[in-house]
Length: 305
Image (cartoon, rainbow, N blue to C red; front, side):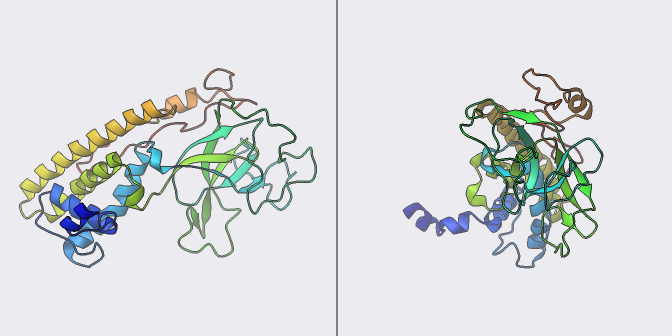
């Protein structure tokens, strides 16, 4: 704590968007210091406009461990009609169940296929009393404990059938014209996803360094007095951000079992068959669209990584 006092900072000062923006100003060699990222000055306006987009793209660019969450999904529809109090219309005809997108979801990583292990009905859903219905609680000992988790086939889609009467303006994936949903054949499904980690206090060091460089690359040119120098600082920070993201993808590969590959359409289709091999599932389900894949991060020079 003494070191923070010497610097004239508190932990709260260090873990704020304003602190991240000021680090980005330094990285871009800009002679600005923000008192608050929402203070209304031009440097603050430029940083604020870029901040949210940089954060969300970066979160999708690697399977950051600190941003991993797994939650039971809320059922919206069952195409078999066997679940009461939910709809029966599931678009496309390929899947049985439709689930709501989790709150604060930046990227769905995968849907676990666990035919012997289910998390129970999510809050707000009613578990059918009919034992033959698709949704059911575990009975007796659970043979799924300790088994290898197999990813299931799933797809994100937009559905107009289950929009709340008052969708509001801040609900993730919901608008008056439709909502983003998860389609899958997994009953009582859960989702492993990257959540929108807005608070710098939970970021790891790799992510913070990448975020600073990424934000610096976005603000360097708009705020530079010498535009030629601004381009140089933009490109330098792009290189730093690329290196940090690449290192995070390698770290993820070493610490977890998910793929660090960029998702490519023809590979996703090729890997979505139904086998019992390492990437297979049960009931004709393969590894899933986008399983383990990452989104490319758009960069200020027009490229992507």
